[in-house]
Every structure is written in structure tokens, then in C-alpha cells.
Length: 118
Image (cartoon, rainbow, N blue to C red; front, side):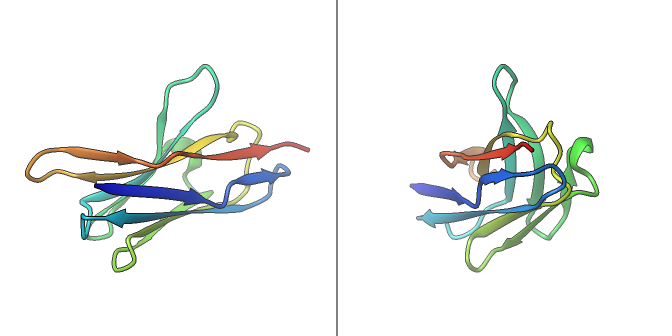
């Protein structure tokens, strides 16, 4: 069993920064990929950023140049540095960990709220 816990959400003004953290614990020693998703009211959950084993990263177009994903595999942690936050960024941000062997398995955290308002 795997347990993901996010932290670092909160409220900032437009242009501000937040750093989200996600800690994984449980029986899995490493993951194929760790990602951040977000979901705002009335919208589908969307991929924000991911980091795949080996270090390759992927970002949604809407956050490129503003958000940075990083991970520490030894600690089973993933981070999301969010800079230049915009009014369209508020959402519940979810941590996701994925393994693909022996079959695809996704694990999710409970989410952390990010609010951007002046």
C-alpha cells in the first residue's frame, strides 16, 4: 500500500509563489513517474507536471516557464515550485505516483488547495 501526503498549499496574491511537497510512504520503494494534477470546480482533473524516472519532465503549456517539478527519489518526495501564480491557477492540487510493472497502478494524495486572489 502507498500513502501520498501533499503539503504547501495556501493563498497568495497574483504573481506570488508557492512550493508544494508530496511525500510517499508505503511498500513501494520507487516509482516510474510522479506528477502533479489539479482540479478546479466544474473542470476535469488535468496534468500540471510530471517527472519520470531518469529525470525527464513534462509540463502543461499553461504552466511552462512558471512551474518547476523536481523529485528526490531516495526520499520518495516530489515538489512543485509555482512562481508567477495567476488567477487561473487556483485549484486543488493532487500528487500522483505511478508504476507500470507488473501493471499500471496509480496512487493519489488527498489534495492541497491553492488560492490566488488579491
